[in-house]
Length: 117
Image (cartoon, rainbow, N blue to C red; front, side, top):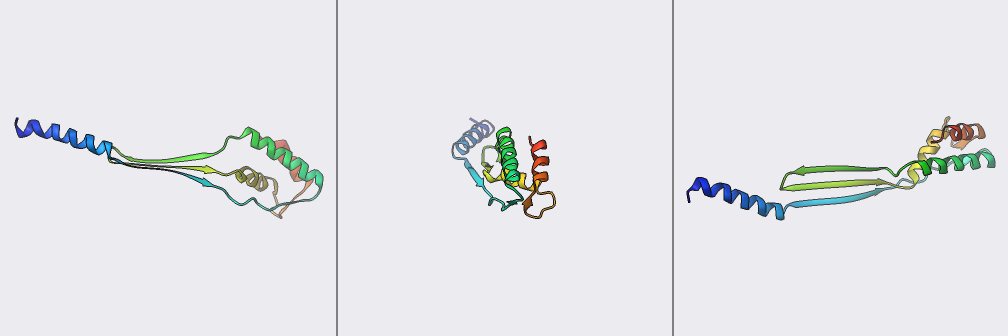
């Protein structure tokens, strides 16, 4: 056998061996944020807001992002980031408390509820 014939066979065997022993990393990161503090002008405002938040939560799917990086045969790196349960609540607070005073009024709650999806 000549060198030209042995080289492709040796390269195939080497790449196959690297494929069996490739470096692979997979990670899932759960990212949760603190629940945003908020107060309500009245009990009706709180009830309207929480009913709308549940409506939004029921219609939304959990958010997840994936990052993958591959160098074929040699290296594979995957990260999955899953956002926590407070994300929908906090986003709802940001959308509802339009004047950012930390207190949700009945009017703000009704507007949010009318536009909740």
